[in-house]
Length: 479
Image (cartoon, rainbow, N blue to C red; front, side, top):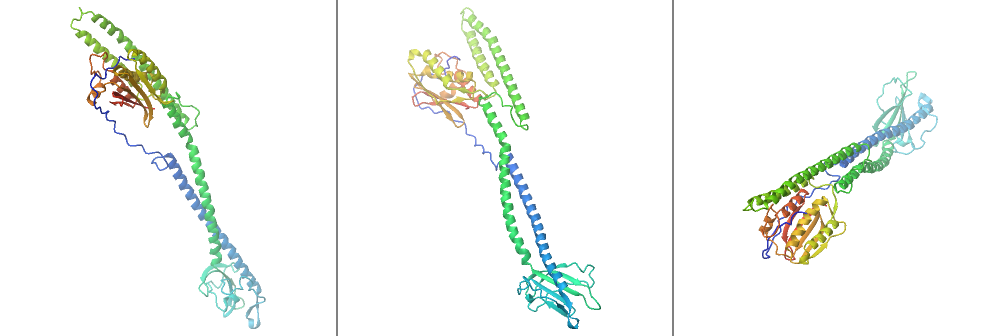
């Protein structure tokens, strides 16, 4: 325990303003899907792009295959009609062509249906009844077809302007007669209609498939990134002091990173232990010579005016101050220690209640269960001991200690009903060696050391006016 700090001197209670809090930093933007550089965002966008591309390519390919299939079925039907017509042709009176049977079966029997057939040889023309006496446009074709058994495809407008799909076959000329041109047609709707229906069904199926793939990708990405979230929680556990190292049971891709982090933790722990050992050795090496000098200078014959004793006392204060600062700096800021505050505060209340038993102090302790700070236990004792000692020293009979969880950590408040301090005196009290009353025992380093320790942990100390009438010391520490 440090010498009782003398952060204040007796003075009339007056208006006291608490130290101005630091300007709050802007809140960090939450990580999420739209955050730039997010692994989840990258993976999901890449998967969405590939799924979309794959579905578009698959849709186009299936569409082309369906078109070819339906067109082949339609051409096969028209070719069958041409074969039936060719087989039914015969010479009638006057050597004119005629059919030995009717070929106007469904669907070629419906007028203006687009299902037509026509036979032409010179000026002789045979037609389906569905043409109602009109002619089909006959595509240009050479008189001598190298493959008369093969029908040729074509497209044309029908007699009533409707779009038709044609199949044309030319029978070679015989005995000086012109070639016979056979034409069969089907409406373009016979091709486009089934394709539209199949396209709608295909689009629905591909859409459902795409949604399933996207949902599967989201699940896969979240499942794949879950070890990273578990690693983050493990590191938070280490930082909070609830475990010394990160568990080694990790996926193969993360295991090297965990090994390196654990090695860094071990190295930092070793460096901290060495630093504390050096500080302890230095403290031991300087404490004995200073004690010897103090004892020697207590003889007034050696130091009549007390000047040397004052210098030795100043040296002792400086050594104590810098040793504490070196020890806390060795922690590198917030440590991985986790200290439950209930135990230390109860012990400190008991200790100072006995030290100041003659004042019959009432020391109230209001602390929620489980409140903890991410600080070394020795530093907790040092900081709270300085504050409680200061409050007990100047209190008229009532000291109140309270702790509450805060947004950025833990806030501990030590209040008393003493004379209190104004803003200027509070600023002087937290400076190293700042003593407001030289008649009170102490060295003036208690509040300054408490402030430095708190700042090394990322917290701070603020002095203000308590509603009890005295001083209110607010200590902020990381949770």
